Length: 341
Ligand code: NAD
Image (tube, rainbow, N blue to C red; front, side, top):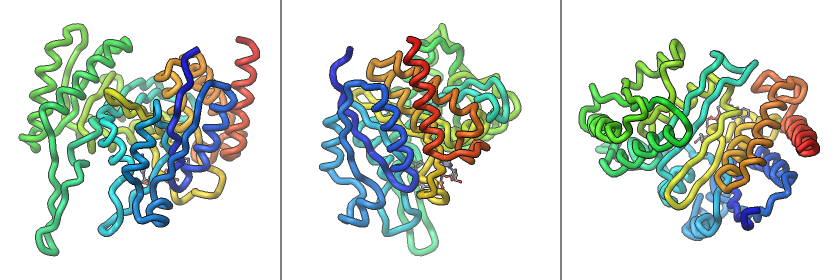
């Protein structure tokens, strides 16, 4: 059995604490050598101490082996704080955001979709360089560097190779964003020549948004810049299931952080009906990452089975249950599976 694993647990804001408590419950059930280290960052931390995340918080996070994160609120407008999620991704060098999307029976708009979206996580339009010139003009800087392009593109091709995937599509808008997307595309072409075993093509982001609905079978692995990846992954979540059931891994050379792709869902926070499936599936990805692949499969299967039971599922996926009933169903399924293996 692998050594003890220190997991930084960030409950987050809104529905975050509800789905995190459900997810920790199922992880506890697996009786793995985990030490959970709770880190409170986000809206409440900002209100309490004037900082949504501090250097000390980052040190605690960096002292752990992996991070399991709930959604964190980022208020709109001036005079508030910078995205905690973006800060952690940058500080920990989590440059690759890996988001697997596979059609879930009974939930998917389109059956048989199986696409992995890999999003550059550290630069692009999310670099945080924005300012006003006077009251009426606002500028944002889109940073694209050769180094970050090479890193994410190589990651995508290596991912494809390691996971038996056949094709990588680079998604851009180089006809309009000639310099920034132009550089991304230039590097994509160069890196693709190092991987003769993986097919390569590229496409404009608007055409991709359309094709995902019309002919998703043309995609296998998609690699793209930060903002495009953010938007396309919500579309893919809608196509393959629901925003509440999509999971992601943020991976760097040293650290890794796992989270659902959705936000804090303020409209349903505190009502006990948040869907914990996305975070539970992210926890399954985390289990794989730290070497517990059998438990990762068990958790994934238990969540997928529970998602077929309308009686226990949360309302966002057409269910008649709530967070607790769904969690109990996952625990029941785990218990059944563990008693036969
Ligand atoms: P959202 O994902 O929070 O909500 C969009 C819709 O999906 C809402 O109707 C919500 O109720 C529903 N939904 C989302 N997750 C759900 C779940 N698990 N179960 C049931 N329903 C669910 O998106 P938003 O409203 O744009 O963002 C709200 C806040 O979340 C913002 O402050 C934003 O900055 C933050 N956010 C954080 C992250 C992150 O921490 N990684 C990601 C996205 C958004």
